Image (tube, rainbow, N blue to C red; front, side):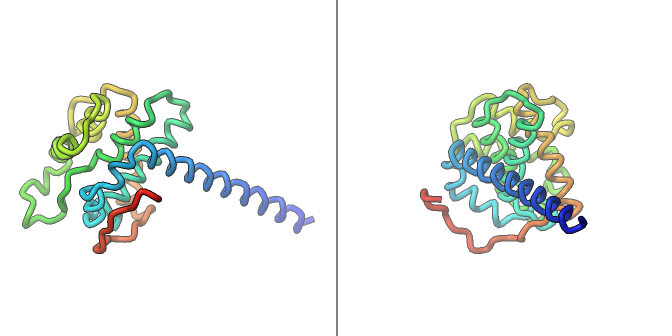
Length: 189
């Protein structure tokens, strides 16, 4: 009887893991489709050389926030523009510097207040941004940014960013550290 229960439990667990894997694959495909240009850009690859929280790089953090944003929208059945949600999530921390380096960054202690504007400026130079994407990037640090997001996509990314940052800071979600061998992705991936 005990073997039968553990067999059923193992099958249920396997099904659960397969569903998670399928969701991850679906989100990865949606991210590639919506933001292939961002994923292939040299500056986005450069973000894998900067640590965001714990030992998670900025690029990994942004990917996690994009996936978490999609998960929140799905779980809560929030209708939204998924392309703009993904692009805003990937670019929300596009500040392109190591904010931990006190010798080279004069705003180290004020990074939380200033980096949304810097990320928006950097992203605007490289990509045509919709008003919704601009709002996501500019206001993702609410309440530090004082003015809250206008669009539901901004609220989703703001929530996902807080959740991912918490997990990374507490080392619940661990990264792989800095990637010193930055390579450009090819179009086949």
